Image (cartoon, rainbow, N blue to C red; front, side):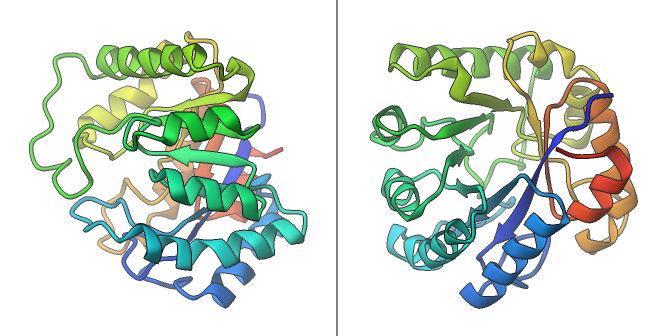
Length: 254
């Protein structure tokens, strides 16, 4: 099992499902990002809009207010920062502030300008599959073959990026665990991850705190580590996680 790249999560939001606003303020978010980098996160993913099931969108102005100072501060400390956003204006501001990766839950398909912003940059890009919108995506998602449908969607988005002049060396793909999937869909995607690996790009898996019986997502560490290890066993190259130190101990990291 090759050691995965660890991407640590910093939610600069008051309503993310997993941390309840623990890093909603810039000072707390910056401290958390530095802590995650010290623990072994090769990338720190900063987001200012919750995309949990049922989440309400925020304005671009509010998202910019939340993430820009955090990204700038972390980048100034030498941290490799990813911006978790679906909005082109936020992508632009984040890149100017020092972000080196764009992590988009809509795979550059949710904003008319997102593809051109990404193409004109030198940033790495994570293309994620999401069925529907965060507010309603988990109400009644239906698949014939979830693995084939997610693979085909991501393959199409990769082709769109290549057509826009984005090198495949800048791309990674993400099946979007929990984003418009029932739990059996999530399990099947992890079990059959080799189908996505067959696209020839690094596969990112974000299963952290999404699976488990505990009502508080922060109490789902054991399940997060179990499914993270399984994802890596099945080919995941990047794990997006809240608990970096524990994940690094369980599966390694680079």
